[in-house]
Image 1 (tube, rainbow, N blue to C red):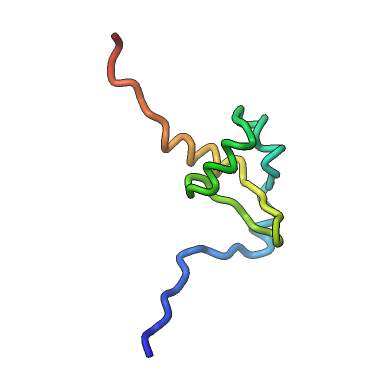
Image 2: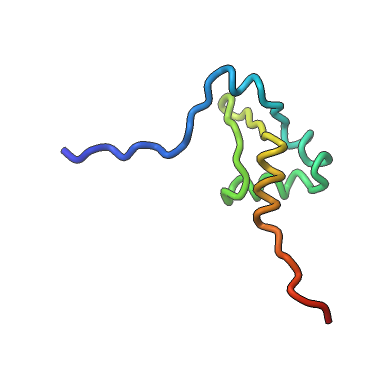
Length: 80
């Protein structure tokens, strides 16, 4: 029998989860200036992380989302 692969996802404690401000996609979209559809696409492609609280209940940490988008930002290399 082969050993099971351990999940790389970190589970948060109740205290860690309570200390974070978690937003719905409808709350997050205007806060960071993008559409809800874009948030859903970024989630499905694994660009941004989310917390799944129930069967269809998803929440986002605004600071983590902004950090993920900042990492993907393309810096201009010159002007035309």
